[in-house]
Amino acid sequence: MACDEPDHPVPPRTLPAPPRPVQFDPADWGIDPAKMGRMPTMPRRGAGVANVIGTEDRMRIGVTDADPWRLICSLVAHRGDTARPAGTGTLVGPRLVLTAGHCLPEDVDAIEVIPGRSARGAPPFGSHRVTPDAWRMHPAWRSNRREERDAGALILPAPFAGIDTWFEVADRDDDALSGWFISIAGYPEIRPRMDEHDAYYDAGDELWFHSNAIIATKPHELQYGVDTTAGQSGSSVWLYDDSRPTVVGIHAYGSRRKNFATRIDADMLGEIRGWAGEAG
Image (tube, rainbow, N blue to C red; front, side, top):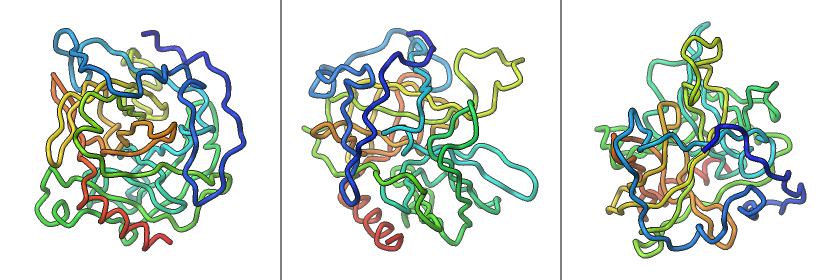
């Protein structure tokens, strides 16, 4: 797959008002809607490096100020005068950003949240810095770092002006997940297919997307062949429910043969609802 940004029309700007989540037609972005339903598992050839399964198939997103891409946030950790990529998050409410627990490190002063970030200019919706008192983590991750409960959130000090939509979050049965195509978009720390001597090699400021089938489901985990690398931790794993993007997992880990997400189950959904209640 070429790494050029997708050749697709800009989707309509007419969006539903809160509290309805964003309505999204995948066909507008060159994604085959037929692949959003049940599909056979698609094994990939060979072993990749890092978290790329087989060949590198991610696609760079150029238009980041439209749905759903504007709801996907670059996370930047700040400590003193230094800054480094911390991962990816997703707006699941006006003031709630869902991410992985390990994207909230203990040694930083704040996490900057930048929705729809693009290397082409200033952040289209600005940014918010969130201090540790407004971070939330699943209790099992906070207390003993249980990987299957690796989830967290940031409560924003205020909504982003110009953003009035967000992803849904849902607990789905195995039959509604196994073999289905899911999507992941995030901000890799190292740009795919870029020479390491390039000045922007590790800027972490571009949004990259890939979609593939769920390989296996476990009580607290989803496994899939979607390509990811460092920086995409915390990205939402989503599928389409009546053309509505719905989060069913939080990307957290990877191996040479498959990647993994913390599954949204009843327990996790209850935690997220609690955080949403705090965010208001």
